[in-house]
Image 1 (spheres, helix red, strand yellow):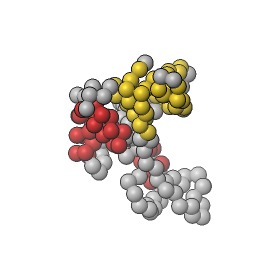
Image 2 (cartoon, rainbow, N blue to C red):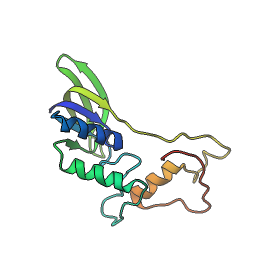
Image 3 (tube, rainbow, N blue to C red):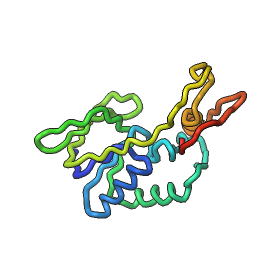
Length: 162
């Protein structure tokens, strides 16, 4: 598979970059490990749960999702990128496919843009490694991944989008 620009990461920044390049006539392939675009911040609930997306920035996400749907960007979900190599013809992106990651694929690109996303900063505190203690990002991933929420007492502390 060959493309002019491979964007690694389908969160808000990766989608925006892919759309901007595509609007300028660049052939773009957007790859991400998740089953659907959105990244950590706009992570989509697991299919079949019947859950609607509830999040801050919903209008922004709707605009990005709709623009991506009608764009020329080739979206490749469930592509777990593990290596990018410079070769004579450009760059080769190596990825493993699907949740099982059993098959591999190579994507040859003239350029690669890394938009691997944000992550939360965890400030250690006494007991932070105990079972049942999760970060805000971990709780969000649990909720959106299967509508499971941590039980018992909840303390929310910190800052940032995750």
